[in-house]
Length: 185
Image (cartoon, rainbow, N blue to C red; front, top):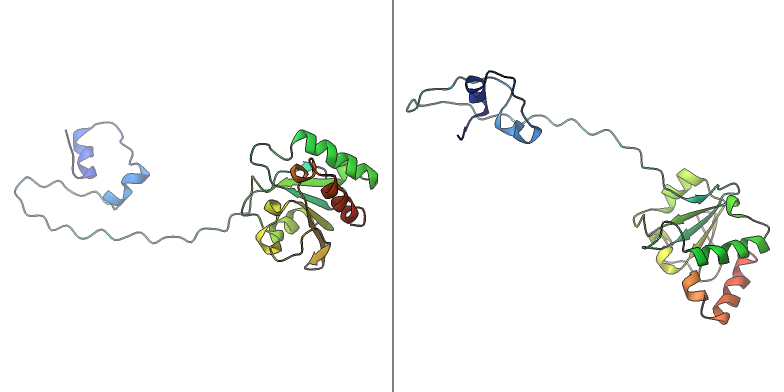
């Protein structure tokens, strides 16, 4: 059986019937009498419901590895792992150790999981004192014009966009260029 008007359900069923949100446009909230077939019906055009403005939704916190004790953010870009590849994490920890830091001092954020993340959003959540970007793919859009492998600043925040560990693993020259910039950063 096919029913054109949802209001007719009250005559067909004795039980409570609930209207789905996808069917609300068919029923404007007032019960309409079902007219016999052949009677001309003068039904007013249903008025669209006034939309209430949506409340601003707070951005979902970004997941990260580490404890961010020193306000040092490391941005990575991996599509196949949560934060950073295991061998790359070992290399990063060795680099941090040379600078008297541990994994607890930093926050590793994988932009592969947050492609639209901005520096402003990062600043709101992490209150960073400096940002290390591992690979061009990990650089948010606002940093597109910054020099590669040279320390710079974005809104008075020290930023270094340098090689990703995937690029460094096969080249000693790239490792040296990376270390020269990171040791002073």
